[in-house]
Length: 207
Image 1 (cartoon, helix red, strand yellow):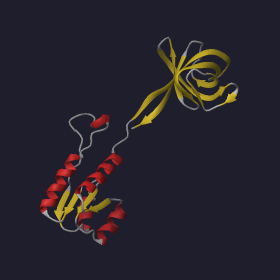
Image 2 (cartoon, rainbow, N blue to C red):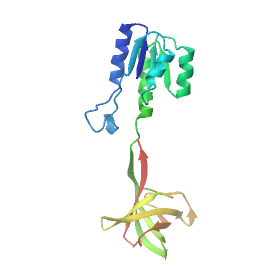
Image 3 (tube, one colour):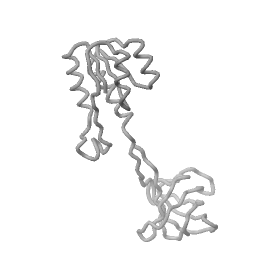
């Protein structure tokens, strides 16, 4: 972060607000299990935001330039746009804090994880082909959705991966089947599915 303010007193107040946006960097993850975020002030001063401020700040990546009660010179604005540097000026502290919080959130690396969205028990095998089978099943919990991946569970063990290629309910092609419903499905799997197996359908969730 680069800071420019109208007075040294205001500059100190801005620095305190910026420090509040950092999460706990002593831990592997910050608040709410998200990656830790540390904001570092790389440049500061009193007066308008100039072209030289932009040049100085551009030496760092992911930089934000913040002004408070100061003007942004046209040359500075043009250079910031050319370099893809975010620059903004405020006259109310809390508005600056809100804006900075949103900008930080946009830049936090996203964490992806697999979440089980539904479980289905395989009741019957209708046909078998190379890498694909038509099965009948019942949704035990959650929902089963077309095109999602599923863990093939056999006696509690993860024995492979499948993809729900097609779904039918009451002989009608559908995109989703809910808890308690029986369905037919074309599944693509590296190993043969057997009656009694459980499909744990997973979705990739990004936070």
